[in-house]
Each structure stands twice: as C-alpha cells, then as structure tokens.
Image (cartoon, rainbow, N blue to C red; front, side, top):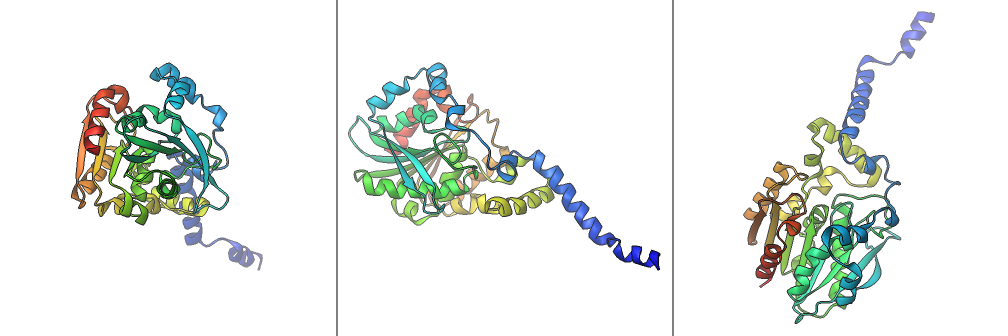
Length: 312
C-alpha cells in the first residue's frame, strides 16, 4: 500500500519534462539577453544624477550646454502620458534663431537623454525648426522604472507630438529618432496624429525588433517574450516596428552607420527593405566610417547638409 501511495504522489514524467523544459529555457534565455533589467530589475536603474551628461557634452563634444540652451531659449515642461496613469513625460523645447519653418519631435536613444542629442538637434535648429525633445523612459529626468525598447516610448512620441501641435507655431512637422528612439518613432508611424501631421521622418541608426538584438534561439525568444508580456505588459511582437512602418507614406531619411556595432545586420536590412517597399519615399545616407549613433560625430557638416537638403 505504501508503494502505491508513493507512486500516486510522484509527478507524472510528461509534466516533469515540461516544467524542466520551461525552467531551463527561462534560465538560459534571460541572461543571454540585454533585457534582463526589464524583466527582472525593472524597478532598478539610473537616477538622473548617475549620468554626467553635461560633462560628457563639454569634454567629448566640445559644446557648452549652458550657452547652447541660452542661445536657443530652452524651456521645460512635464506633460501627462495618455497611456501610463500618473506618468509625466519630461519635455524640452529649443527655439530656432533662423526663419521659422516648423518643429521637430526628437527621440534620443537608450542610456542617453535630451542633452546628449544637442549636436543633432542643431541641424534642425539651423534649418529653421524648433526642437521639441523629451527624456525617454528611465532616462534623464524620467521617473519611469524601465525602458520598453520603443514600445511605450512610441506612445510618448505621439503624446509629445499632440502637445507640440497645440503649442508650437504652425509649420512643417518632422520626427527624428536615434537608436531606441528610432524604434519609438517607428512604432508611432502608424498612429493617426503622425499620419495626419508629419511631413518628414529622420531615423538615425534605428533599432528594429527585440528578438533580433538578443542573439538567442527562437524558442528562447518566445519564452522570454511571454515572460516580458507578463512582467511589463508587452511582448516582443508588440514591440517589433516592421508592421507599423510597412505602410508608411511619409518621406523618410534613413541614416546608417557603416561600422554599425550595436544594431544587428538583419535589423538594418529589414528596416531598409520595409521602408524602401513602403509607399513613401525613403532616402538612405550611410556614413562609412561611423559607429552606432555617431554619424554626426564622424561627419557633422555632412550630417547637417543631408538633414537640411532633406527638409527642403
């Protein structure tokens, strides 16, 4: 009788195999991915004081951020997110000193903030565009506890655009996104406010789908995707921007780094192919000697020239 009871209490082999399979995949998949801070450490992260952005701008870029902000009359406002209750998006406005043409919404990359894109923003300011930028989630002054690799950030792009439409003078409307900020703009490209109002889109070394960044096998990505959906409310499919950009009709300037060292080749190829086959015009500028998100650093004059010509 005792042996019979032990047999009944033993876990069935097929159930045990499934649990082991799932556990092993979770253990293997998550450390392989750069997304463990989203899945496990989403409450941790940099505080604004952890990153010396202004020091970097002064030392590495040779810019004086205080003088820059004074020249372009920088102002700051916080606007409510329409998708995340209680979250305020930090927004920053720079005013052009040239004849006004319109405004641009600028979305920076990961581990960055609105100050770090001052060099690229000047290309638009010189072209007569006011700059409306914002700190991405968990970056700069943002109080969000995790980034979403362009998913929730894309919703923030739309909120910032709607704010700018109600506060900026009438004129042309452009969107610019770099790296993860590029994925944010891509994710916003099928939203009505963008479709109806944007005249130009500039994507600087944009990110593609999350699973392409992990380097993990498909089964591990699928497992992590389900876990991600449970933890932070979106799957890898939700984040992937290819569907959003496939029907794009807005002229796009796609800026690529010839020595790209962050975005996988398959992502770059997919973005380029999707935008080229979309109804809208797509112009591609590749800076052969630049690394990821450093096209301006490699050739600032050509960067400004390409942006200016594209906007005209």
